[in-house]
Length: 195
Image 1: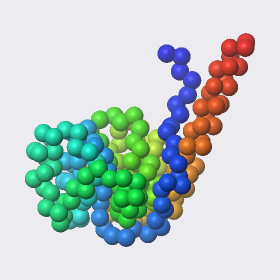
Image 2: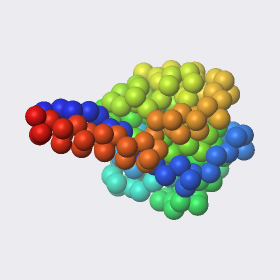
Image 3: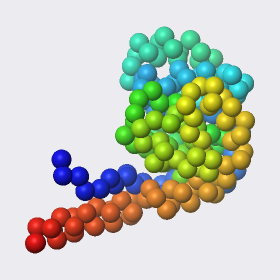
């Protein structure tokens, strides 16, 4: 392929309410319930930290959900909120102390990571795929290699400035930035065609 540039997704930042302070000590998992996304590992992390975990997202793999997720749902320490719309998404993302993103594959992007930071909530993600491109380690969240490292960083989450998380998204992941970068690439292609 004749590769020109990687252009990251952008979000409409106005659709995400910034919450300057975490409202509670809850951890959040926001994504498809599938082995690739690591819901099982999120439960393991939250239990080891003795923190409440809310899981939100569609059940994409019913067998995985039934075996690794459902047995832990007690509507007290582990809650499954299902698929949520924009209002509930903003509420959940904004009030959590951290988003857990323990992915089990080399994810090419991660919209929930950007959406979480737009609401001011830092992310603890496994250091795979695009995660180092999305998260500034130690500034907008933490990149970790395994469950044990994730457990350690939960205790450090208050080191992260929630306003910095929002600014990070405003600088790098808005829809306006994405559009401008696509236009620049189209202009480069047109210019090269003229030569």
